[in-house]
Image (tube, rainbow, N blue to C red; front, top):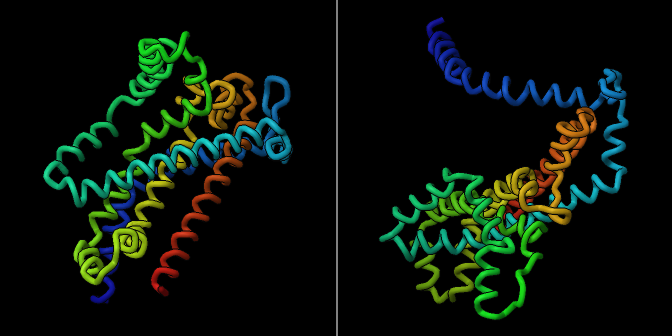
Length: 292
């Protein structure tokens, strides 16, 4: 009896501590997700929703060319933005960890400020930079390189990718920088003392030890960028149309909530498949690295 009391009290205390977060997830994620799932199996009839089980919405999503193309376009944009964010963040994290220690606190503060800064302000800033009267066109006109403003810089896939990359670089940087913080510099120095060149040190030591942070940063950026709604609405145009905009239109314009729900769940499963693939890749690389 005396042995079980502390355990029971510990379990009760743990459950009490987890209750707020569990309630939050239940109210704001689990229940709305379940309702959305129910809607995806119903169908729209005129101006009302018929609560009869059907797979018609999922068949429509999986067989309609528009939805397939928009989903692929979203994945291309998300992958491009995530790759660019990681390419920018990796050398930045390396520099802060090993080369710019004196200014590390100041630069980290600036990066954190950019995370909490106005989301819309940065989008409109890029809109003003890429627009016909924006900074780039003004420089080109002043230099005499063009006779009239370039119109292809805005309202396309390029503009969406550039803007998303700028928005989500901090989310790629933070996991990568955390991985560099856990990297023991003595190991790197030992490899150099044993005659390893810069490329060998990077390929065999630095990259494998920081790869979990790279994959985490890539996945965060990929999910955020692929599912973004505001950027594609303000800067996307036809070639920059993403599935989030189509889902929002099904709910807000077409009022076809069942189809919008089915499209949302298909997209969620697609992102989940990408996440599981990266997790499996990370584990395979770790096993391969340990075996080497």
